[in-house]
Structure formats: structure tokens, C-alpha cells
Image (cartoon, rainbow, N blue to C red; front, top):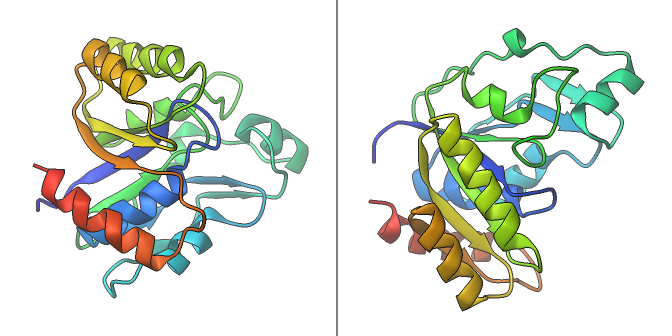
Length: 205
């Protein structure tokens, strides 16, 4: 597999980006970086717990905020100013998985959004769509935004209780490739991450 950077974003908050990021790190033996963390526990710690390979390195957050809220709000409460120009890719010897905060249009300050971080880096986007009532609308809106910005999307990963009809119509209208379908697991452990990482490897190309 090529050494690339992949930005994991989602159609909303609590879509399972951290679980998916761990799967990607395991499948690609890639490093992990979360540029903005708002609140505890840290997603980087969770990824470190879930990966089994010895090659993945966890890079420190550029902004580590105490308040669990939207980055722009957390930064204001914590007395921090998030600047888009402050984000610099960590040095890696392999691929890098970058996990965004919330969905694409989550504000990081008064004018910039999470998706604007992608435009600073040569990264392909991996879109996570958890399946719920309303997920079709949110998935299509997010995909259309990415198309409008002419950003490169590697594919989509569905997460949650399977919904064949929702998945079908989302793929039809977005034209995205389905990289993986992750079911709603009772407990997320290293074994689940390994299981899905092996499936992802087969679908990657």
C-alpha cells in the first residue's frame, strides 16, 4: 500500500470516527494524529488501546482543549485561539490517519471549519456515515459539500446497524465507493479492530 495521508471525517458527531481510525491504522499500519481534541478521554489514547501492530505511532494533538464542546466554543472557554495556519503534519515514515473533530462543518474558530484543515494537506478523505433516521440527508449533504470543494474522497465507511436501502441510495447519489461496513458491536476491542482491518485490506484497492 502507498504511503498516503487520510483524513477521517463524518456526517455528524459520534459517528464512530475513532473506532474507524483505529481500524485504518491497523489495516495500513499507519500513524495516527488528531489535530484538535476537546475534552477527555482523548481519542488518541483510545486508538492506542485498540491497535495491535507495533508500527503505529500516536502523534500529540496540536490543540488539546479541556472543555468538551465544539472546538470554537471549547477554545473560547479555555482562552485559546485556534489558527488554521498552526496545523503542520507530523513527520512519519508511513501513512498517516488524521481524525477530524465532529463533522465537516464543525467550526474551529470564527471563520474556519474542520474541513478547511483538509485543504492544508495532501490528504484523501474517508467519510464515516453512521446509519440512523436522517443519515441519508446528512450523507448526501456532506458528499455534495466535498464535491463542491473538489476534495478527493477515497470512499465511505458505514457504521452501525445495517440498513441496505439507506446504504444503496447513499452510494447511488454520491458515487462513492463503500470501503467497509462496520456493524454495531457490543464492545469494541482489539479483536474487533483486527477483524475489520482484515476486511478493509481486501476492499482497499
